[in-house]
Amino acid sequence: MDNDFILVLDLGGREAIEMARKLRNQHYYTEIMSRRADIELFRRKSPRGILIVGGDSCEDAGAFPRAVLALGIPVLALGGASRMMIESCGAASEGVLLENQASQITFQPCALFDQLSESDRYFVRVDGFALPEGFEPIATTIDGLTPAFADFERNLYGLQFYAESNDPDGAVILSNFAEKICGCTPKWNVEDYVEEEIRYIRERVGEASVLMAVSGGIDSSACAMLMRRAIGDRLKCVFVDNGLLRLGEADQVIDTFREDLGLDVESIDASDRFLVRLHGLTDPIEKHRVMRDEFLNVIREYTLEHPAYEFFVQGTIYSDLLIRGSSDEVYARQFDAGKLLEPVRMLFKDEVRKLGALMGLPEALIQRQPFPAPALAVRCQGEVTAEKIALLRKADAIFREEIQAAGQDKRLTQYFAVLNSDSTLGRRDDGFAYEYACVLRAVSEQSTTTYAVGRLPYDLLERVAERIIEEVPGINRVSYDLSPDARTAIEWQ
Image (cartoon, rainbow, N blue to C red; front, side, top):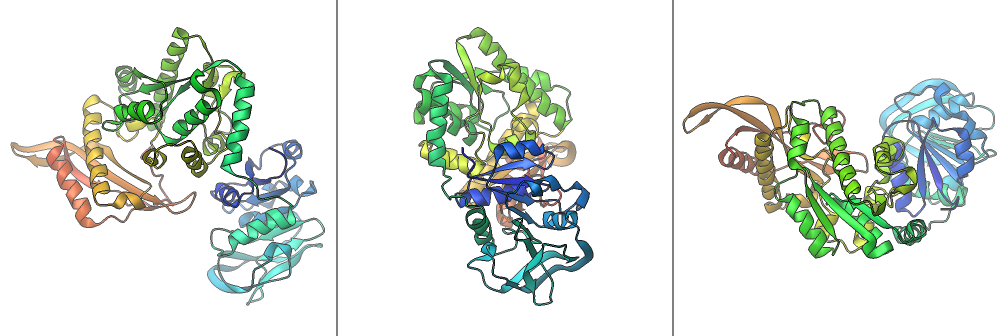
């Protein structure tokens, strides 16, 4: 990749991924970096422009990476980042002048606002500033406030609103910044990425054999198909059955890979050893660690028995990389850094789905629900046992079956059951008994970083509850999780 791209500087929050994906959807390549990154890394990457976002919860001007402003590269700061930028340049703050209100905004002649006209906009927050020398307003509200400012000589721009969160013309603003101010060409697409990655894989692997562990999810499936297109039958796939998958899922994964995709997949039954390792654990973090470590143990043993494989493939995607900060260090235990391949590491989830379509994956697999790496171990609260997993697996299958039968699956991103660790008093035919409680969770993606709780019909929830209690002895209570994304994650982990 040449330097024809925008670098998104993350000051903290959800906005960096949101903005980067929006720019990529307009075919401008983007990468994300933390504000803590060494300034020399910015110089080496030499992007055409820098988009600074986040920092809304910590607007300390001293925390702003001011050295970035001296690179001579166009900068656009959004939201809290714009306030941090202008204060770091010497602006005197007059405090918050507008909050959670709509106001009419007028744009001044400026390449950033080309094709835009005045309109009513909703502002989360607009502060007042005595602008420092060199800066001038480039947008004003009907009340005389300055939600946007610029230093044209230094190519520095600040908007006190997010171009995609609450601005109907946000896509135009981002596009104007990338193309008209930074000189980027809208040429980014998954098709070209595939061809470039295939050339790279062939050059790096040569005639060597390659091993890949697949899960059946879209990330590993698309990655496996890309690898096969690059090196053909020299790719060997293994599927580690940890015994903690959804009902019928292990067989379904193997059938899909072998019959639909024509990939050579070997199944390794490791269900007993995973349960042994999980025995007595209740902490979700420990469950994560044990599941990861035992998976690596299985792979380690396989590679010792089959030493012919010189490279190992991992289906890391860009979101994983940003969360971890670097390639997963645990795989370094299996192969040195030069032997690990991550073909889809620079793609976001939506781009991986596009890749899957290009690779000919069936639609059901492309749209498969995200599933946590520790599988049902983290949806089973408290200690994980074979009995509890069997109950959870049946309850989850009923919920998914009823969701699909009601046609609700088309508008939901994820829907699943969780088995609560507490027992609750209920009534069976032979009298009262303490059994487990089950919690249902369904969400739909609202943007690249937010979700909404699924508004399921009451009769559907009632039917699911009745079926679970009737058909799954051991569960006598069913609840629906309405927790919003502002305070909770999607998964119960």
